[in-house]
Image (cartoon, rainbow, N blue to C red; front, side, top):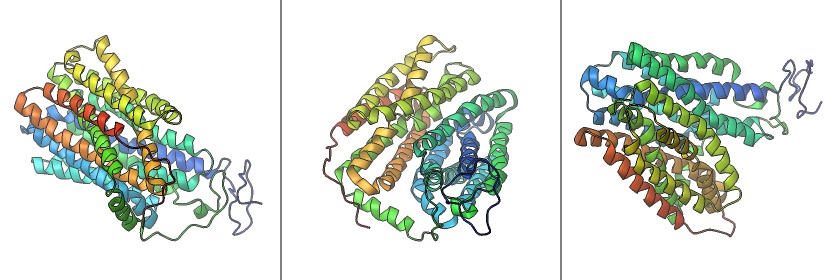
Length: 438
């Protein structure tokens, strides 16, 4: 029997015969993908809480929004810095071990926060532990699973796993908002810790690092032996960074994507709920609006990928950043105690635009850096999180100083205008791009 053949009925494999699914009626790759989807949802639960905690922590401990925002900024910065090395860690230590440890770190940080009494503990638990945990499960997790387990249907699997993060936000944001509103922030923190812990046994029992571990070929591909653990991937990531940093397009892409992170994760995800609450909007209503962004996020990303195949990626990014900046300038006028149609329109629009920037940014990385584009994109993604971290902190400081978030929305709108100009000046490269010297 050929190793690439998928079994549709139970087959008794010959001893040591690779590639025979045996008792699995569907290819094991789909089981691994399903576990990955659930794992990303469980890990995404932690992202539902930061925006919900500003007011409760301020009421309980008297911490400023700047202090709380700084803890969130540590989380986002470590997420970005860890992400480029996550794939290297999975190559070296295996997917199961890295993901199980990452989920445990997320759960430990969320659970330990229940007993915290000082702001530095929030920075340690939510900043360092959660940041390292979520960073180890960034895009590298879904990309590694897809590349190892699938030869066919990679696009479909990538899209579904990317949507898992938005799905987690959709599931947990309203739930956590209800818990915070009715029972306080501590039960909500315990809830997201349990959501991460519950997934660990599924990862350990059902996840496998490579199809060869169970004698299978990748879905739609040829059987290959499991490669030896990679020992130079982290070094290569650093060398590619230094090579790319010598080129202008890298800084334009990194700078514009940093503004993308600042105007999404750092701004809306972190400060939208406390800002809405400043205008007496119920926390559950504000959280539901943020969850709706997750629905249209999926639609916008898929449509943006379709557009990227047909239009100049630079012009698409210019349109995305320009429209995003204009919408942020109007947001202070839309904040009210009740949800009105103009606010719903903003939420739908912002959801469509949320990560629509990813496909054209990745396309430009591919155009400029060829075979090294995936690693370069990892570093550009790190800049996205650094931008998010800065605004998560500075947005809280601005709210403490001015007593309102209005200046934050206006500043973010101006930054989006800068990003529009940055992407337009990137020169197109038409000749083949050699790999960076590594």
